[in-house]
Image 1 (cartoon, helix red, strand yellow):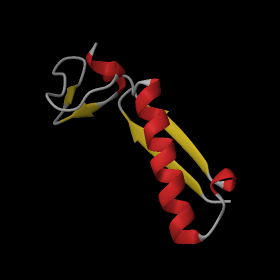
Image 2: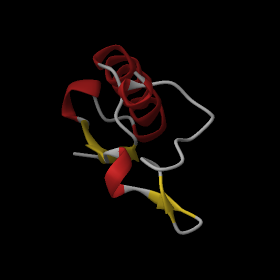
Image 3: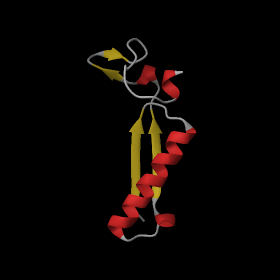
Length: 71
C-alpha cells in the first residue's frame, strides 16, 4: 500500500481531488499497485504557521499559486 504525503498551503477541494487522481494514477502506473490501494494524505499549513526568509506568510503572503490561502 503506497502512501503519498503532500504538504502545502491550504488547497481547495477541487485542487485536492485533482492531485489525488493524478498522484494515484502515476503511482499505480509506476508500481503496478491498483489505484484503490494507494493512500494520499494532504497536510496543509495555515499562513500564520508557515514562514520563508524569517517572515510568516501571514505577514508577507506568497505572490504565486492559488488555493484556499489566497481568498
